[in-house]
Figure 1 (spheres, one colour):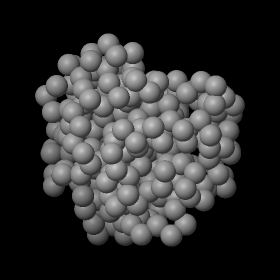
Figure 2: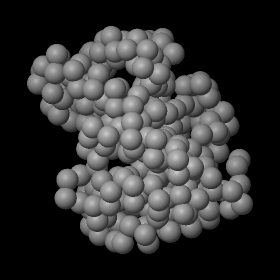
Figure 3: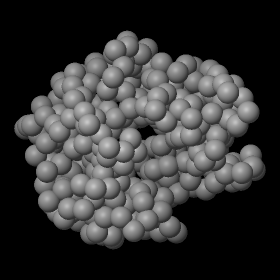
Length: 286
């Protein structure tokens, strides 16, 4: 395993850790201020959210690289199916293409895909995933043409109804194999996979070429909100060292991205302090 105590250049910030994924949350730092603060602390990369990029993808991507960082990702595609997806297939595809264009403008390493929940009336995870596969297979050539990797992120099973009918790394790898396109990979998030005893075997099945990202946070034993009460690394019950070992033994050597949704704790703190703690926890517990 890499020794983060001696070298934390693999540390990446997902700006959701500062509340930038939700309107009117966090301190509202500009992308430029986030970039400079991360560069000062030795972060290696940043993943942005679409809502903070707007029409400035090329400009912000160049600004990030000029500061010595890379753009590790963009969050995220629209939900593709289920109750939170755009109302028509045409609207889904239009927004999906727009998210790919933004990722390409940023020169982001990947675009995160949260697939959406069970399709109304089907009562079926399998049927819902079949429809997801059809949409992604249709869009994959455009992503490849745009030099964008689509990172399928399985979410914790608690989100199966509305946010993700893709809830295990096993099914994410199977989806990659079913679609069989070079632009498709997976993202592994501690919050969503910490409980999965089959994780190591499934990651080895995926192999390094199909792992596009690794996201850090923690699962609080007494979480109060399954969406917006994630823990900072070391504050919860996840075995962070073992999880990273499984990811790295599968061949992943890329950024490790801190992504903490925390409306009542971390988003209320001074972003400078949050970033300092990210660095300290990354060095000591990850």
